[in-house]
Length: 628
Image 1 (spheres, rainbow, N blue to C red):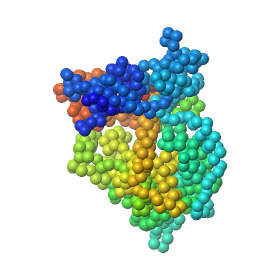
Image 2 (image 1 turned 135 degrees about the vertical axis):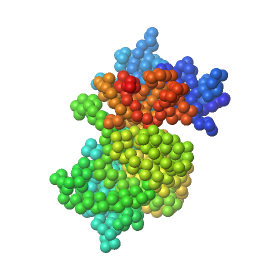
Image 3 (image 1 turned 60 degrees about the vertical axis):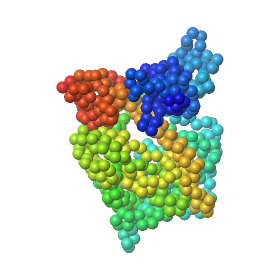
Image 4 (image 1 turned 45 degrees about the vertical axis):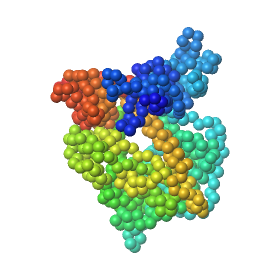
């Protein structure tokens, strides 16, 4: 195949692969180290793809030519080869050292870690990473192309506009309506606030979901807006938050801080006693939060009635919010889909040293679920509101799984000890019934990991469509404009319409380009967050070599089995050559490995393993099977 385009991925041993989409599926063509030298992980290149003469299912790539490079920075240490200064680059990004431009690194000592900008085939130092910095964190940020530093011009623009809110247009004054925010204790970028009015004579109650009007602070096309568009999303790394907006806006002027007047966009829902949303009103507003509450405070109040830290004036609001969420839950349960529970491995960090101290599985409280219900309801309502008016939007679409994926999920479930019996088509209610079989069990985190891989992720698009996982006919993101650019774009569409602009048309091509870009940003952020987590797990488990765990296989990779450890939610890898009675081959469908005899390991299978070694830089925990 001549002039075939694909994306480069680099192996830390120095070779790489060119990933190419074909009508028959993705192929991975091997790239030799000499061919790989000028390129970086993630580069889009054209190449000649040649099948192996020994095995037609294997391919090699040659004559590579760069087509596009999104990466602008590299992380590494300064080294000297002969009389030349080089950057020893992160080996998951480049397989060779990159030379500095003449003279630019002469004052930097060997061994110092730096972030360098790419200038053609050379690099220029941007900043030196200070002693005592978390090198893993710095490496993770640059490895995934996360924009960690705001240009000074953007900071200056944010400081200049931080106290100036453009309050043009008609705004409903909601400052006398009791309003609360509910977030984690360390959250500073608060972008949603809630109010609730008591049920009327028909039993219908009104919930007001007010979202920070970021557009009132960040004009479209301004330096801050252009930087936010490039970032696409905030990135939440353990030990560090990289905001989409400068701190003065994200955590101060734009945040719905208690006791401060703030411009907002409010979605008002009228919810009847059976949980049906009978009317939706969207309008610009001015609000003032009366209480900045945490999830634990609200969960404790709802469970026990203890309210020593909650202002009495907002207690009725919390009770009516619980009523509204319970009504919505009834409808949600009837239509199916999966819960958005965060059954995740939580790593505790020492407050002084920021070193990991423990890892535990952590799930959502009733307060988390209440907020999730209300935010999902607001997002659905806005999506429908836009479509009903023929307006464009950045919709969040999640496709129905194919019959092949349904069959695959049923087989995985069987390996976990669960009989799914989906048939050829999976419905949202069938998915909910499946989830009910494992929810709350010790293997639930592992099953959710497999479920997420099987069903795939949602994506942004201008074309309205259903969200299968939520069983929502229409869905988008509206409730987090401080953290996601997609939400900010939706806000601007709404505000233009409310301001009388009737020129907006559904399916705007410019919005589809934006959707493509925010999809890429969201994927990069997700990868960085997951990798940072794996790095900390590896650092923590470095002191637990030799310990035994029970786990479940959640993925099959060419290099081995990915195992999720019960009771921690963390994952590790069993190398192929560590499996007893090898060698093993991957099954054609990729769902298991076998040795040609009776021995087989498949996704979902339980395994007893021992921690053999760790590598923090690669975010790896190496496991070996415990002999029977």
